[in-house]
Amino acid sequence: MSYFQRVRIYSLAELAVFAALLVVWLGSLSERWEAILGWTHGLGWIGLCIAVARGCARGLFPWWLLGATVSPLGPIGSTLGFELIAWRNRRTASRSAAVDL
Image (tube, rainbow, N blue to C red; front, top):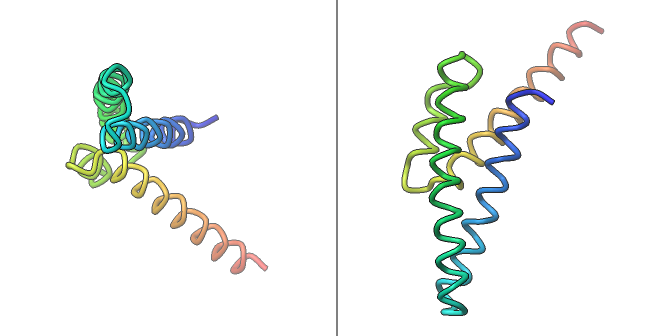
């Protein structure tokens, strides 16, 4: 599995934790789970920022992806960014395959 795929999956997992945190917080469901999910999201988001920054420094990701990750959107921004990059890569691959025919 490539570094891109690992960090993309990590971004999706962080988005799931963030969504769960929002549900628990908005629904006032459990202070205990709010704290657990809050810490998990906070530490996970820091790890995601580090992983994306590392990918940017290695030239694997564009720098705007780091901006999307550290923005207030956090895992939403990084997940949207990863999906945009994947979509562009698929589109470029299909165009080059069509040229090869």
